[in-house]
Amino acid sequence: MRGELRKDLATGQWVLVRQPEQEWQADAECPFCPGNEHLTPPEIAAYRKEGAMPNGPGWQVRVVPERNPFFQVEDDLLREGLGMYDRISTRGASEIVIEDPAHDRALAGMAEEQVVRVLWMYRDRLQDLKRDAKIRDVLITRRYKKPGARIPHPYSRILAAPIIFGQIRTELDRAREHYLYKRRCIYCDILREEIAAEARIVRLTPHFLVFVPYAARTACQTWILPRQHACAYETVSPEGVNDLAGLLKGLAATFDRALGDPPFELALHTAPNLAVKLLPDEWATVARDYHWHLELTPHPERLALVGGITVNETPPEQAARLLREAWAATR
Image 1 (cartoon, rainbow, N blue to C red):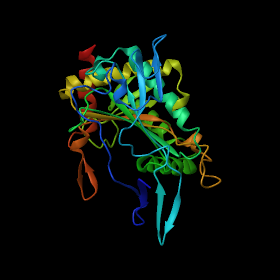
Image 2 (cartoon, rainbow, N blue to C red):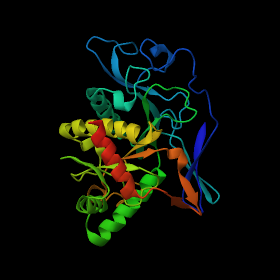
Image 3 (cartoon, rainbow, N blue to C red):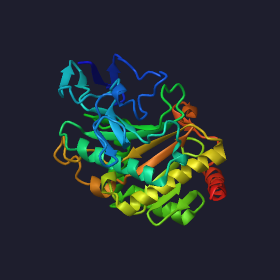
Image 4 (cartoon, helix red, strand yellow):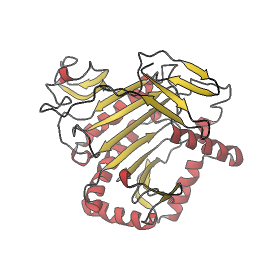
C-alpha cells in the first residue's frame, strides 16, 4: 500500500500514514490557469462553455485529481488486523475543484453566478463519489490564504475515504444521542434557539441562518445552517444554492472588512454515504437526526488549546455584533 490508515486504540482516531510524492509546484506557469490544462492530470469533471473540448480552455469550473493524493481510487480496499491493531488502505479519492478561470480572484470578488457553479459542482461530486460502495465519507474544504500554499489560484479540495472523518463522526454520534433522547434534530434545536436569542445572528434569510456558534472555537467562527432540515447537501434546492452563493460572497466580504482580509477555512459538513453500512442499523436515524451545514473559520492557524480545551478570547456575542456591523457596511 502507498499509504494506510492506522487506528489509535487509545482514542479511536484514525491516522493517515503515507510517504508524500510529487507536490504541485509553484512555477512561473500556474497549472490551474486556462491554457495550462496539460500541467494537471486529466480532468474528472468540468462545466464548460458550449463547444469547449475536455482538458482544454473554455471551462468555468474544473475538477482534477490531486497531484499528491491522500486517498486513491486505484487502490484496493483492504481492512486488516495486525495483532491488536487495525489498518485500512487509502481507497478513496482526492480531488481539486478549480473554482474560477481567474488566477487571483478571491471569493468576495467572484461573480455570484460563478459561486453558484462551484456549489453545484460540490453537489455533483458528492453524488458521484457516493455511488462508490467503497467510500464511506466525503469532505469538502476550502482554504483561503493558507500559510505556505504553493498555488494562490482559488480551489477547493474534496477527500473521499473508506472511514468516517473524525469531526463528522463526533457530530453524528452527538446528533444520534440527542435524537434518541429528545426525538428532535439537535441542529434544528440550535436553529430555533439562536433565532430566538438573536445575539449571535449575523444574517437570517429565508433559507439559511448565519451565526457565530454559542461555543465558537475561534474568534468570528461562523456557521451557515439551513433552516429546512436535511441531512445531505446533495438535496439542496436551486433557490437554496442561489441564496447560499450570496451569503458566501457576503461573508467573505464581511471577513475582509471586519478582520482585514484574513485567512479562513470553509468546510462542508454533510451526511456520509448512507448506502454503505458496517452495521445493519448504522444509519437508522441519520436522515432525521443530522443536519448539513457549512463552517467558516477565520485564522484557523490561531486555534489555541489549554489542556485539550479550546480557548477563544472573543465572546461569540461580540464577534457576531462585529460581523453584523461589517456586513451592513459592505452593502
